[in-house]
Image (cartoon, rainbow, N blue to C red; front, side, top):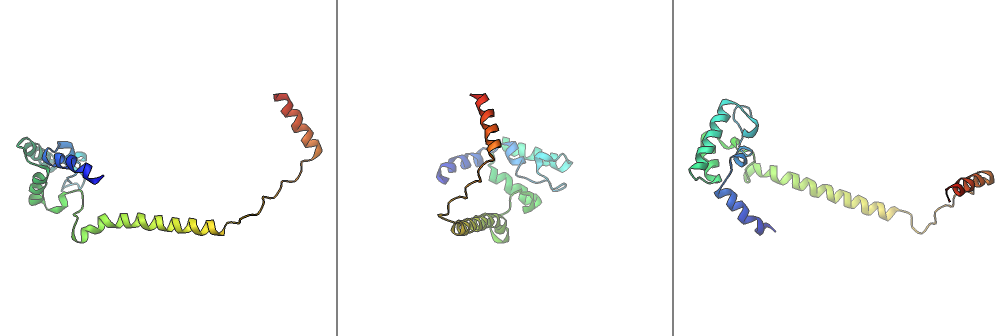
Length: 141
């Protein structure tokens, strides 16, 4: 499955779009993505991105140029190395741990459930009530 996505990712890197990059780059002034910011620095960054796309730069080249100017914090996604790797691993580990807890709880609950006991029979209806129910049901026939 992952190999199917490789050509699309490579095409995105070679031919990035303005909106794609604006959603992945953070404005250093207001700390929101460029697509949500209208600060002067964000406007200059948008113009820089547009000029680099017209010049034929790849997504990686544009991001590297922005990181060189503003630092690693300009990227909306955390790095995939060092301590920043925790931001990628922790949510996955949390989901796996949660699934394991739910699985164990379901397994224990199913083992403690009563087995083979017949359901208790409901007490018989009062004869007068049973007659009224029969009359009401007969009206629908």
